[in-house]
Image 1 (cartoon, rainbow, N blue to C red):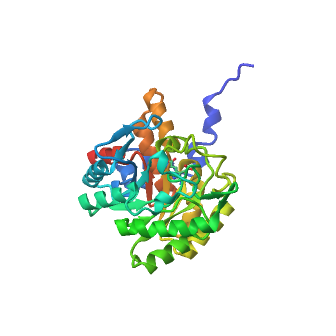
Image 2 (cartoon, rainbow, N blue to C red):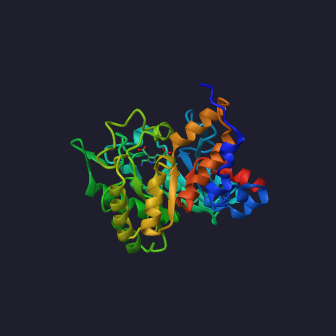
Image 3 (cartoon, helix red, strand yellow):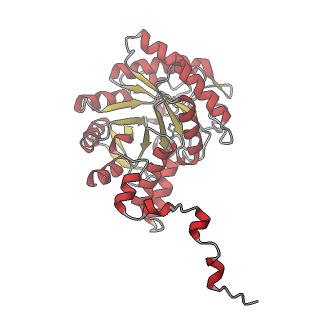
Length: 344
Ligand code: PBG
């Protein structure tokens, strides 16, 4: 049937009748009013830049699945830190790719005081003392099986791992790390690291807890970056959180807060915005997201194909973290985003 709409149909009830005179579009009608009513803003001070460290000097290697991201030796990491500081980025986070022959069952190289991660911290702090350095104490870059803990008879042993990472945290603090950010998800690690730091005169070194780290498939490119891809036996589901769970994430974060975490981190980022919102509302702690390698790779790949506007999608994704309640974002986009934000 060919339906005829006469004008009178709409005029029986006007849009003002329908909305009660409310017009959401009044506050959207021009740039100045959108600027005036905007609720969240991304600034350079929200950014933490993760960088990958390799042995040697003058070394710089691309990472295939992370276009624009490089592994660098400690001396070049110091240059990167200088660049970050000039851009106004408050902190960097370091992740090592160590030689395969230094990796073993227990990740013992993490207890070597001048391993590459600590050497990078020393080099960065010597060059740019004012930038924050955040180090990870997970064992995965150091083990020959790619797990974040010590593997015995097919089991990641919790308590032995905790005592080792607490010792490693002290060495990292000694090298100059400002914040220890354990990403291993062992039980009791926050309290143990706090005790070890305090007991060794590092009570001003903070702990950013990876409070809720999910057993995610978004970490793929990172595993290429640190060379654990071919090594990892099985998966990490006996210690990372099931992506289906939200209450469990709150309970896990509650333990970390109680044990003395100074800040909470949620990882991955965009697929877990609901967790960010819940944790921020529940604990009112400084809250951060890690926009992980797979998230970065997806945006870069689509942008390189011309399927999305890479810069706009990057900024929109970072702003989404702020809206969800984040105080800041750990992101491989940090220098690119900072350069853009500096233009404004
Ligand atoms: C493990 C660790 C992971 C990442 C950083 N540290 C996850 C993993 O390999 O299981 C992922 C970061 C990223 O994907 O960008 N301690």
